[in-house]
Length: 116
Image (cartoon, rainbow, N blue to C red):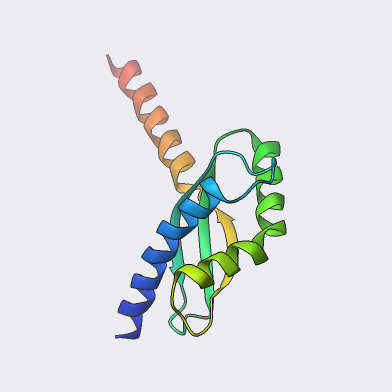
């Protein structure tokens, strides 16, 4: 039962974070960020936000610094939008699955070209 609630809170946070990052964050370091997933602990105290950033490694690090600087603001915005007794603590991590998938697709395309 608690896991179901954590999943519902995670989905709601994902939706709200997308809106907050695209409309409310004014930091120029935070460029084009996509929230790919949110995981919330069973006790709703901690959340891990997986993000994807368009750009090179330097741009990714700048974006992460901007998000860490704005973490308090983002958390307070989520607290206002989602009715919870305590807003989960935010942790931002890069979602490497998209790059990993693109690499596998590229390798498969290379293999397919060599076999033809």
